[in-house]
Length: 70
Image 1 (tube, helix red, strand yellow):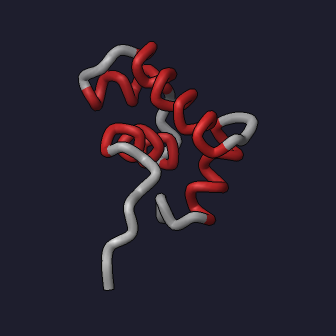
Image 2: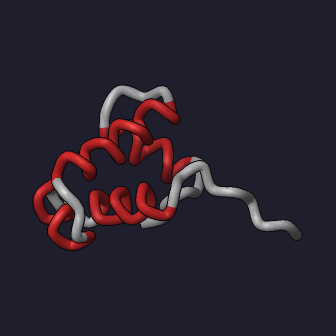
């Protein structure tokens, strides 16, 4: 069975995995060695890809699509 291609980039997945762990933007930036602006850009990109209104809806949708798991 072929592996399904993720709609998330590796970095977007890292960012949202940390969001699931209840990390704030500053903590995510520090952990991934990127700027807070870059973290926000990744979050915005995913929200746009999914056509949702915010981080929470993005997380719910990513869980539903099995892009993330709890």
